[in-house]
Length: 288
Image (cartoon, rainbow, N blue to C red):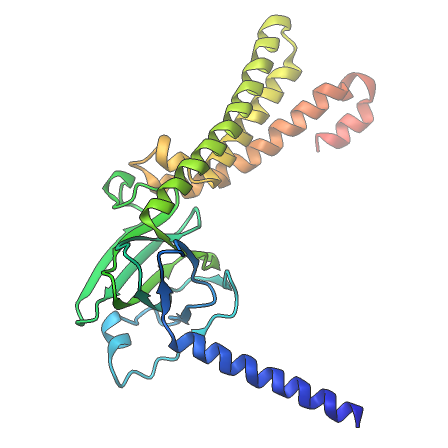
């Protein structure tokens, strides 16, 4: 008898969760004056374009048989893909704010295509790709973002085609433009403090190396330099401050710098512990 009750409860919970997800899928996100930051994770639906041939016109057809999947995660994870993913979400603007920002909170992406369908059926397209200069983007942001003009008291349909070869996450956020600007300023302040500390440590150890000529310190300086460049790149700052006109180089820096970090670290440890002088056998194993 108890087992039957447990089964009924499990079935009831399952039915409620399915029904609630369907309601969330059909109801648009409501933008209000009190809500200037919204995570789209559990509001969106996605479609993995396995053939890489799906177009916005095909999606918008009334008789389209394309099946979008309702997301149940705040940050949907789709595994490792080499094909585009389509995102769709409905948005109703019940606020006075009309200037919004759609943020893709990830440092690397091959391409993003946004399609905003107005209540009158007009399609507005915006694109970001890997090769285009950061200065030519609507938002010269260290990650990815689109500015959206959503009139008050209007419902729009938003479609985003994301091509990110490899590990595919969908960290999508919707901000009012004012809140997004404040968030950017706060992020840059914290990142500035972080990289300022790294630069200070690097300069201090470089000064010590110049003073006493101990090679241990130059290995440590190289380690900090490569580690700092790695972090600078993964945080999306390299493409803003170092090579804004050569963004395609950004994806290779991590792969180039990672082994250099390891080499510099191994050289530093070997020199610091004086393995060659104090333990020649361990040094031979260490250098294999």
